[in-house]
Length: 195
Ligand SMILES: Nc1nc2c(ncn2[C@@H]2O[C@H](COP(=O)(O)OP(=O)(O)OP(=O)(O)O)[C@@H](O)[C@H]2O)c(=O)[nH]1
Image (cartoon, helix red, strand yellow):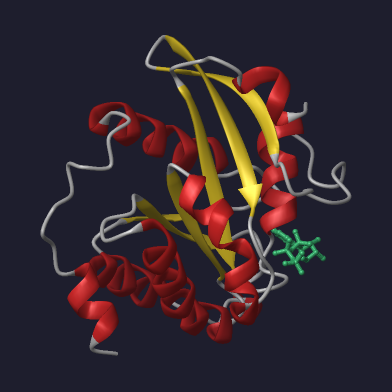
């Protein structure tokens, strides 16, 4: 469903941006979340896709946005990043390069949004066979610790973890409220700027 239809005037409506290297599975993740189908969505489009979701017995509207496809495109995407409420940093557990890219994408998010974006790190494609898994769970966990965010293994193909990560972010967003003022003086910025 188009994001405009659901989001208008809803105080419990949240926009979550998906950020990650090409081919990690951002479009498939959106398709799984919005349509509960792996293949259905051809393209994620600039406005994203929305759906109703019940979190802790309370209905909310979540829009997922696939922001950009390359580190060099961050300028064009900056306005979208600024407007997002939270960010899913996605890599593929089959691609060490996509894990390395997460730091650059996080830096782009921080530049656009400010010092303390609400982040979740996800390793997609956890359904793939063991011989395809090239990034260990420990590497993902370690990066999440550095970024001070939650970490989940997900699969857009089977749906594992897809709703869980979105629901977790909605809970944190509700707890934070709309204001971006309640920023923690945390180590994330320091971590990113010393790399
Ligand atoms: N097995 C498996 N394959 C996946 C999964 N998610 C995505 N894929 C496959 O990975 C490829 C890329 O998926 P996309 O969703 O197009 O990736 P993307 O991040 O949107 O790619 P860009 O649009 O290039 O940025 C496709 O061939 C998908 O079928 C998953 O969870 N499991």
